[in-house]
Amino acid sequence: MKIKKLQGSFGAKVCNIDLKSNLEREDFEKIKTAFVKYQLLIFPSQKLEPKHQLTWSKHFGPIQKLYAEEHRIPDCPEVVVLSNEQINGKHVGVVAAGDYWHSDLSPSNNPGLATILYARRLPSEGGDTEFADMHMAYQTLSTKMRKQIANLRGIHCISKLRNHRVKVTRPGGRAYYKKQNEIPDVSHPLVRTHPVSGLKSLYLSPRFTIGIENMEDIKAQPLLDELFAHQIKPEHIYRHKWKIDDLVMWDNRSLNHRACGGYKTDDIRRIHRTSTLGDQPF
Ligand code: SIN
Image 1 (cartoon, protein in one colour):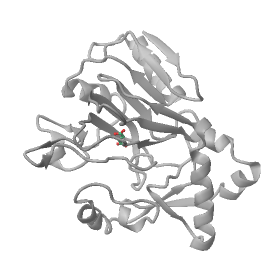
Image 2 (tube, helix red, strand yellow):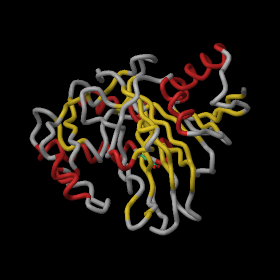
Image 3 (cartoon, rainbow, N blue to C red):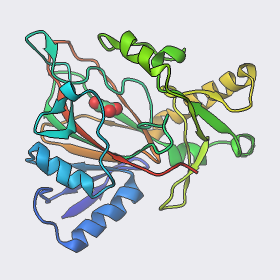
Image 4 (cartoon, rainbow, N blue to C red):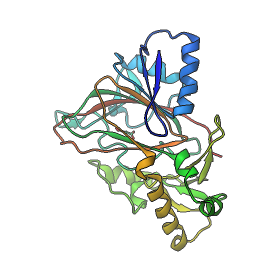
């Protein structure tokens, strides 16, 4: 097995490994350490059935069953299909998932830990995924800003309809998000401490963070805008250009991500996704 760091501040490629084989304990420990150290791991050329992806994902926390049943693999429902493909006029997967910068499931008390995506079909153009390093984003804030946000908590909201920074892009999305209007918001510290590495990161996103606890919007919104702009400075970002059979997994405790889109509705992209449950941010 070879772990090769990417050029920027985070991410590594892991080669010469078959994720469906029984890994040596030592290799597995190296991968777990690399996952926290590099935050994003890319395993090229994997040949996996959904059950293999599920078994692999279980090493990184309890599996979360997300999205509607019709968008999951029937005999392996923990694996969700993200796709623009339609069969007999019906979408086989979730369309336009993750189209704004976010950390998975931050509007819950126990947000996502690892997200694992496996590329099954790719469009002829577009379809990349971008990742942004929230440790680095925190470290590169001015001392004044770090002091200002040290004890603040962001308000995270699941429904797109209550967030003026995002648009509903998914077909039938308005009805879907209307139901989510009833789900209570959750607050988390703007500065999150990674439970394993102890490093601090900026924990907020334009997709989910709609305000700051105990702060009037007149002050909170410009502050959020400033932090959102800082998060996605080019030096904090890695853009993944997918290859078929890539398995990519990342740590939602310290990375934000977004699906970049940019492909046509009939140019099929199909990704199999699994997610694991994390702990309460502090
Ligand atoms: C996601 O955010 O869950 C999906 C990202 C992607 O499809 O590139």
